Image (cartoon, rainbow, N blue to C red; front, side, top):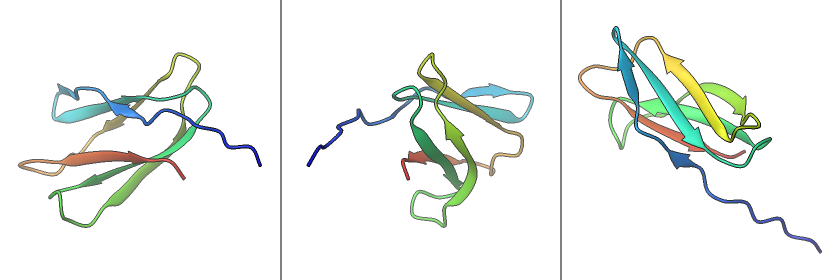
Amino acid sequence: TVFVLRPQPVMLPPVLSAGAVSVRFTSMPGSAHRLQKASTLSGSWQTLTNTVVPTNGVAQFTDPAPPQPAAWYRTIAP
């Protein structure tokens, strides 16, 4: 049996611009992730996108309509 250990993704600080928020995280290039958001930390999580981390190791997604007054984001490896 062979096990592949990969580092956990690391969320980077969000970038706010014109009412939208760019969510970024680092992970191993080529790894697949689901990016999710919720309006409360214990709330219902909605999948925004499925993404594969590019070769630079930083994935980014712009949420054009983040929940107000706050939003929580997380990434999950399938």
